[in-house]
Image (cartoon, rainbow, N blue to C red; front, side):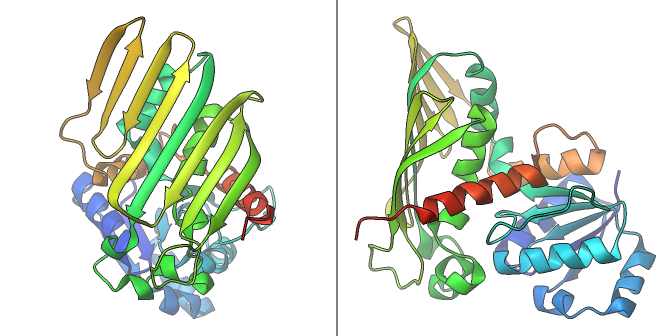
Length: 304
């Protein structure tokens, strides 16, 4: 198991990784470096870090700093694991194929039992339609003033497309191919932010199955639902209540994942890296594919 770990960043997401590491590995040696401090590191500073022989670096800086941090790490470290918080970068960058380190992207919803169940259950199923809803209330996300948060600032890589990109990742992970047909994204609420706060999108997976995705930052009824209708079955999957209802052949099947909290997804994700048993974690290339998809959506003209 990896015992020496560096976390870059000091925001709310770095605290979740800190908590997860302490839960799964009590003897971990953890070094925390602020994003601003790390960005200013010189050759001598990296030499000192290399003396520590870290096995894992977790990038929790603002999204607009991820690519800078990535280049710093690739230049100054070799043969270590690097977890970059989602989104991997604030825009698409072409990355060379041969890298000196192992990079992963923090789409931890892949480790939610509901998503893991759907990936297995839907394999080889004929699906007619998919409807996904992700509604949240930005002022309640963090303890700090939401107007000063990453989510509210364009220059920090905020906005609904990047901040709620989990949905794009798990759609691609489960269904592989995505084609965007129509998209509407802009700021419509009275939230005091610079970024888009709503997305309505229609797309296609597996070349023929339609899906609808609706996301916003301003709903006080917190929702994360996936509704799927297929050949001889329908299901509702609730990622907040951690349960799935399947209706198949007139019979109802309820699956509930008790004693589960979202914090556990961080633990499961880190366990894969620490144990070197890579299975579900998002790869660097998969993270870049999500950014490509987001940039396609941005190019679609929204209705004013």
